[in-house]
Length: 615
Image 1 (tube, one colour):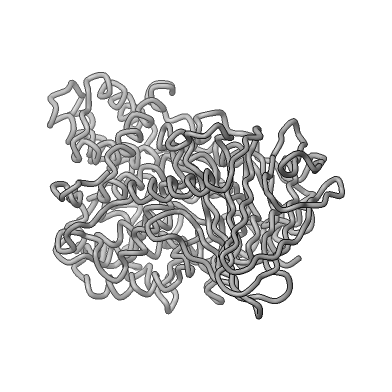
Image 2 (tube, rainbow, N blue to C red; image 1 turned 90 degrees about the vertical axis):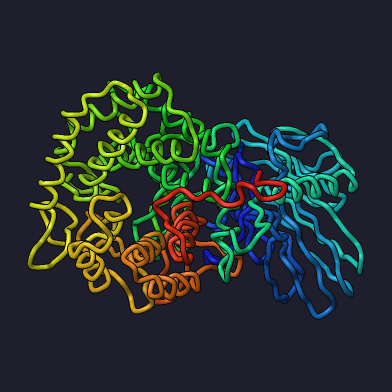
């Protein structure tokens, strides 16, 4: 079996977990019951032993994928010499629409013949616990049952499948108008007929269409324009990556999809980074999703309250808030296109990343701008955070990019500590809550002086990655966004120019940095950083240039409108975990920055008085 390009996958999910479905009709990644659980299908990391669930025409075929409009219901269309067929994949939303007595965690796969006749091959080959557990597949009444690792996955279908003890296979021929269903249920064996399955499809479709934002007036919509559909797709991706109960967001639904083919930069991103969640606040609230923002607000404050004296104990958590697993290498899996090691867990959870405090407080401040109430109890928690920031801001850390070398005095981390104190002072003034404002103002001024003195290189005319180096870092593009300096300040303009000279490709894609990070090999341009360059240019008044760059970056989206973490600078292929929350929230926010008349630093939620509102 061959590896598909990362960009040849679509994603479906149920706000608990996600599955990758290839344009060849193969489910190559699915973790159960949650996004951070062990995999049942991991063919994307090892087609031979990882496990997959394939439904595809026998013999040669052409295929393409698209989503049902404004939903996360995925359709894969097959064309053969004898006819056409469409495979529809979706997961019902846990707790939202399930009226039937079936499993909460289920993947529905419907195949319908459109024209002529199509023969399909079916292969159901689950491999529990990242293919480490012995898996047994046996025929049972109504389908086949896979067991292993004290788990079970039942695949219901009217298609007769033969089993060899570990894999079930079969063929089915469909004529025009024929339909067949496959329903995979985790942990349960509910039975439904075709009408009930069709009703579940309709309910899932309506759920997504009811959730996504509605532009009832194009003149009032910041996102209306040639990229509107990509904004909608990014919005839907972000929701897919959120846990239903808390709105905690996973950075990506996958692990170990490589930043470079054959390299070691393979990480597990199935966790909730505070930073990612904070960046998501602006994107989702601008789209009218106040409920998700409120959930985030409460979740962040709860996380801080759990810590010691205002300290954020770790930069990311399990999506359910559970303890992070130890980082582990799975030597038995080949890795995507031979890229090893395959990792589960993430050792960066033990790092000190001081920028997290700034992103957290910025997000909380922004939610108050959107109408969220900061209670006195919440303020007590937040005040402890600022007191802690005042104590530790001048200590070294590992930075936003989670370097695996010695900690440094990263400029972006210092500026984000400045931003945390700055916004806390603003909130203190607005609420009259008790705060040592004189002390905070003194620390804020000290940070500013230190950054301008040690973090700016006069000869380069640019801010630097750290106090210890003279390298450029794309995170510095965020300085005008957080208000550290005005966007048209010469030092900001010089930093933009340095990023363009040292980190940007001819196509405008932007690398994160250009220095040693303690890992072998090289990385590829980082999608979010490319959007950050768009934002910086727009803020500096170079809106036409920003818009052109934005459209250039959008050209690298997959046919489904999806982005991985990075884009290969030579081939243009998607690299890294997929789809990536960072990339999609950057796409949404940059749409605001390039919109005529929009001030992206001022909350301007769309559709607040539109008919039927925004859900």
